[in-house]
Amino acid sequence: MAELPVLDDEVIDRALRALAWSHTADHLERTYEGKGFVAAMAFVNLVAWLAERANHHPDIDIRWNRVTLRLSTHSAGGITQADLDLARQIDEVTASN
Amino acid sequence: MAELPVLDDEVIDRALRALAWSHTADHLERTYEGKGFVAAMAFVNLVAWLAERANHHPDIDIRWNRVTLRLSTHSAGGITQADLDLARQIDEVTASN
Image (cartoon, rainbow over all chains, first blue to last red; front, side, top):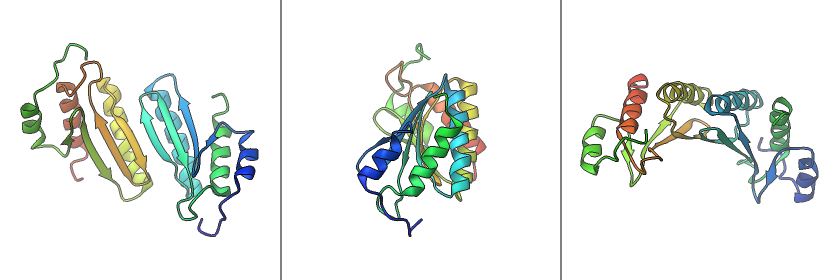
């Protein structure tokens, strides 16, 4: 991922219009609420599979039924296309939430 | 879990001598390092299975190969026997770490 450039805020904001993620200074963030812990874990495992496939791994915090994901490209020091791509893939497979 | 009493520090410290967990003011904490993300996720899923069986769910933070667990009994406002029991179960199935 090191060769990817950090994206401008404007580019990020435009991409996020179609996504369930918010944008802070240095990462994309999304919180998912499942119907309970087991549903939350199913979501986590789906995210894990997509992350491993992309070789790009979000921080994942699990609080019973609530899962918070944070995505950034540490090697680039900010948000890159790799983050937007994985965010979109995660949204595509969890569209109903 | 509401009926379980919060344990004295002395009781907790004695129990922790045999466990891989540390003890802060209001929770038990353990960090696990896997050989990579996939190993970390296997650990998370094992913890999730034990947690659901016990109906007692730790906070779980995943940072690539590093998983931090925090256990407390929110309804009791501190650490109870339910926390020590789940900590011991988690250690029993992940003894090599």
